[in-house]
Figure 1 (spheres, helix red, strand yellow):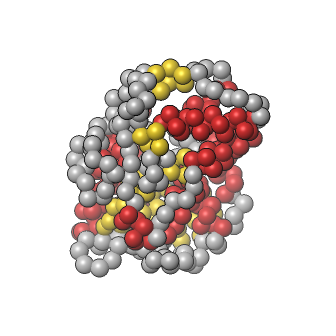
Figure 2 (cartoon, helix red, strand yellow):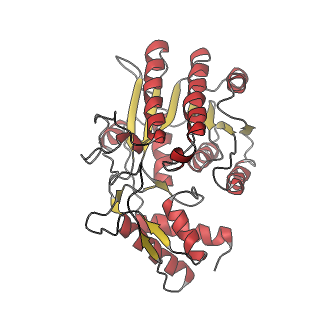
Length: 343
C-alpha cells in the first residue's frame, strides 16, 4: 500500500465532533485497533440529540475512550484538554454543518467553524502535535463549472457562509502551518452518507418523509436532463481515507499543509440516487415503495454539481472508494428501519 503506515496504539488521538456522524465512525475504527481516543462534542441540537447519544453510547464500552462534553469556542477548555491529555494527533470534525442552515442562523457558524477552529490551531501551536487533520468541505468549490473539482482549482467564490467558513479554515491552517510548522491536512468531504448518518441530509429526510406519508421536495426544477449531480460517498470509504491519512502528515520542503478531496469520484444524478433509495426501501419492506415528489427551484447556496477528482488522495495513500450506492443505501435503510422500528 502506498505510503500507508499502521496506526500506533500507543498514541493519543483527539477527535472533535465524536458524537457526530463521521466522528463516531472514525473513533470506533481507531478504538477497535486499540488506540486511545479522546472524544469532544458539545452535543448541540442542530439535529436529534438522541442519535448523538446513541453513537456515543456505542463508544463508551471501549476502555481507551474518554468523552468530554464541551464546545470548541471555549478556549480555556480546549487548552486544558491539550495540556492534560497531550494528544499526538488531532482530527477536527466538529463544525456547524449545513448550507441552508447557514442562511438562517449565521452566528453559530462563526462560533464553531471560525472561533472554534482558531482555538484548535492555537492549542496545536502551544502543545505541538504530529498531525492535525481537519474537515473542510466540497462547498468551497462554490459555483465552479469545471468538473471534476481538483484541489488546484480556484476556490475564492463561495456561495454560502458555511462554504466561507470552510475556506477560512484552509487559510487559517495554512498560516499556522507556515508560522509554527504544524503538519496539517484539510479534507474536502463530498456528500457523506450511511447508517447513523445526519438527519438533515437529503437521503435521511426523504426516508423520514416516506414514513410520515409526506411528499419529498426535489430542488432541480423537475429538469431531469440537467439534474443535480452529487458525489455520494459511503461512510466506510471516508473513514478508511482518514485513517490512512492520519499517519501520513505532510512532509518535505515548503509549508507542511495539504488539502485533499475525499469523495466517491463517481457522481450520480440526484434522481438516480432517489430511485436507488426507493428500491432499497422496497427490498427491506417487501413492498413497492415510491416517493411522492414535489419539484422546486434550486435553493440559494446550492450548487448544480459536486464531483471530486480523488487522484491526489489515491496517489498519497492509495485511497479508492469501493462502496456502490446500492450497497451503501441498503445498509442505511436496514439500519433506519431497525433503529426507528418502522414497518
